[in-house]
Image 1 (cartoon, one colour):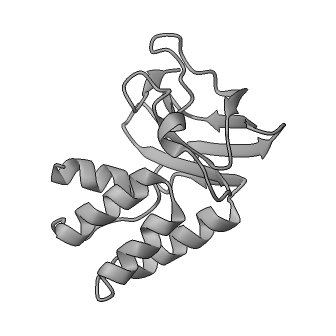
Image 2 (cartoon, rainbow, N blue to C red):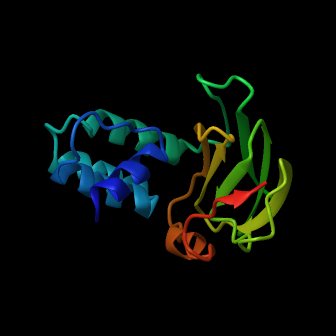
Length: 176
């Protein structure tokens, strides 16, 4: 896994690295990709002295408890805003709703939106949620400023790999 990939994965959930990405950052990035709280707790058990351990525990608790809504506004461009919500609709299904302002491009991972169709500034889509679902939204303005929102539905036996594989290339950045 490249250092750029590690930084991107950790940044997608709000963990920012200062300095170079060490071996512990690569292990944490893999745990984040799994989307499972147990993997994050295992990271802390294996790397108790890591400077990333507190963030891993915080992320594990947020995923375990669920994070049904998130919003963010760019510090650089206050017109750049994103809001993301997820709710369980029926067993095995979840509804993802999003809205944004000031974005020239949006990415919604992993909604399985075909590249080239565009992502509207606001919308909703039902997804297979199983017992666990996590969705990340990235909004980018014309100057390249980015913000991210992420949500999660809690569960014990989630199949995050199935959900994550719905995207064509993993990360969809589609011009709005």
